[in-house]
Image (spheres, helix red, strand yellow):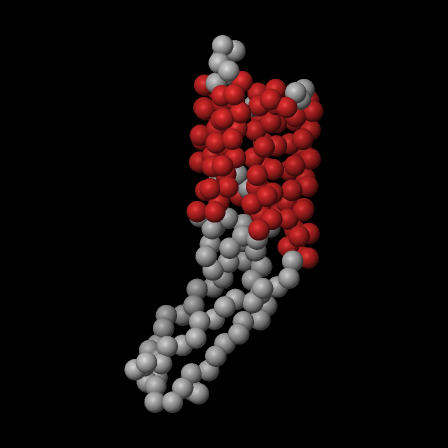
Length: 170
């Protein structure tokens, strides 16, 4: 299972025949193409919005700054590092052949903030009560993958770029 959301691949793929290339040797046999991953389901997408590395960082980091004698800015820094880490890990690990759509990163950022506010004392940074912050988690779990699905259905189908063959001797 990929660590990024797997979106549906375009239905048509442009291919080019090698027959038109004059004086070229026959292309060497290649290994059979790997079967593309099937698109993620709603629940699989939900698990991929926040990287595990970010959770492993944020929980202890935020616990360290909970001391009332520490400045509130430290809590904001921990939240900011978690947000940057979320986007950084997702971008660094993106599948190059079927990358996440642009809106996946925005939804992931919202997911991290909603998760942090709903599961830690980060809610105090936004002046939220415990019940309200937990409600935001429920709304996020319900709406964020749904928004992703709707945007995926509305986004244009982008055809993959097939590289031009390199004739022998050029």
